[in-house]
Length: 282
Image (cartoon, rainbow, N blue to C red):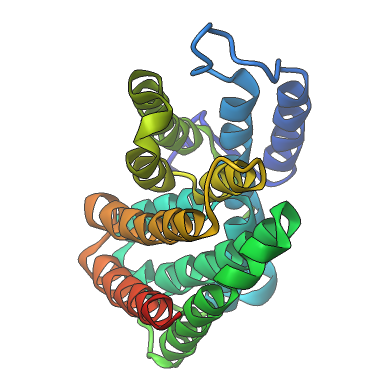
């Protein structure tokens, strides 16, 4: 019998370990540990816990509802935390297990839906004018994602629709993904220090590759403070959403299987095309 790697936790042990991580992270300092404001211990810790939560909750939902429905549900929940984090893990799993590419892609589309929903809520909270202005674009993106989710659900899959999945937490996967995304966010912060406030367009584009919600809120707050006009903010928000879509295809290309990349490229092309069409008409 093959011995399980020490970094893979199963069942109740995985759940308890995740809870312990969340408790530890809650005690980490919120403020940056350096004078440039680049290294934020709690933000990095939260990202680490988020990757673990996606694994544990995802395996539980698959166990409860089956592989295809379970991954769609876990994707929708993962999108509320970080759609980028979910797509990163889904892509990696699709390469390790190519037969899962279809269900992983469906989960990634559901994560995109969760991201779109949360983006709309956040924009209305920041400023109702921004929320109203972006609503048609977000609705178009949501409808495009829903259409593809329906298509992916109808495509026959080679993967068995079983529930024989044990709750699992891979600490190694959790660490690798955290270092990957956290490192990219850190590089973005370095660019921000060098460019200053004059690089709003570039910073929005680069930041949205890894975390679109923070970018949307940051630009929204600048608008509310009077530092940006409504038209300028609208453009920056659109740029952020488009770059977030690009990042998902890039992650699929670097980390995912060929089938996963194909599905993600088709989905994001549709969603981005609809968003740009609505934006050009508005």
